[in-house]
Length: 532
Image (cartoon, rainbow, N blue to C red; front, side):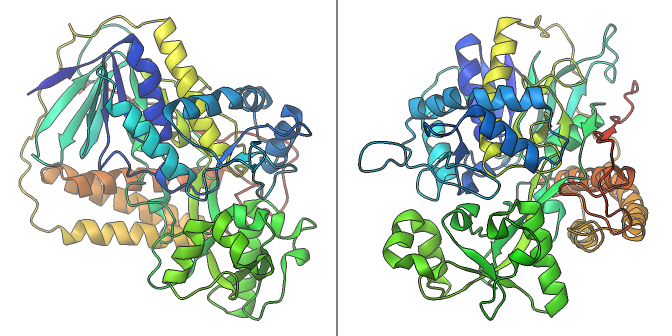
């Protein structure tokens, strides 16, 4: 079996993975793997922008308070302050890569505003900020001789010393990976593995996430024994375009920030019935309100109304959204925009510090894969890209300041095929994939109950057993690996939701409609690590 050695092994090519690789490259060899193309990630679809205090009338304290209010009492204040205060450095990192953020005619920053923010503080590059950032960072990464990027490569499992019979303290020393082009399984050996695989939106039937968002990093870390936190807090983006031909297209929160009003199909506003902030309420409140209106009226969608802004403004401020809507026969300057909620962001993940430290030595987690305490029970809009940049920078700083000892003397066992044969019924994989996503949408969605969670837990337990049998009976394929990871994330979400006997932030249950007086973080232990 081939073994690739490196100083730093980065899994994922979103903004967190790319920025970590760029910061680490000056200190040693970096191998970055991503399961599709470099640009196939959640970051590439981010429309809104990146939070950073830049208006003279704004302050870090304002940003901290807005974050804490959105987080419903579960944000780690020290973490929030650190990440908010490091936002200017994060913006400079992107500018250094060549990102051009929008400016006004007088040369000042053209800052946007989104739901939950008390001030304008969103740096944006039109309405395709993520795409512009990804493109600039990929160009920079490809020029660096110390970085090897392996596209269409998926991680099978992390390599843990206790499992391979190495004496001494348990730690992560790399991973087994599958080359999707050649079907070769090889190992990447490294003293530093950084998980930056993004979220798990594909665990739900309706999501605005790309197909790669199957929760790989969380599942990999859990199987390696890492602690997982707050997985019950799944953010549903309230305004995903409702159209039979529109796959996962978001109508950015920035549209509401610029004055769009949520209305029913007849154009009647309804958000004032749910929150004093109206259409600028945080995402969890807006998503539940839309869900409630759809259930109350029996209508399949609600609408956004921004017609008052006129075509000239809309084409300039939201060029991508405007023209995408036109492709589907919707003129934002004349028509209501049909929208529905869709799974968007996971506030939980691998429990980690701002500088990426997890409960497994040698393993770091950053970006959406991690749960640092920044988001609490609900993410404030555009704080996510900020977190990816700050955690990437801080993790690289920690790893380069205190280099780990080489692991090249650790013998990595060859991947064991056992009695596995070529899969002959791939339909089983697609069937189980669809079943997980539908039951998660029906039973573990925007509004939950004990009975729904119990049904989901029972069925997922059975499905995970079936998936495990399939995994060991047949040779690994990318679809099997994603299904395996998806099922782990589904179970972690359900188990976390069952442990929270209150309604807080993104977790709303009819059985416990009130907030508990004692906020707590939901922590699940990792899978027990035993010698093979």
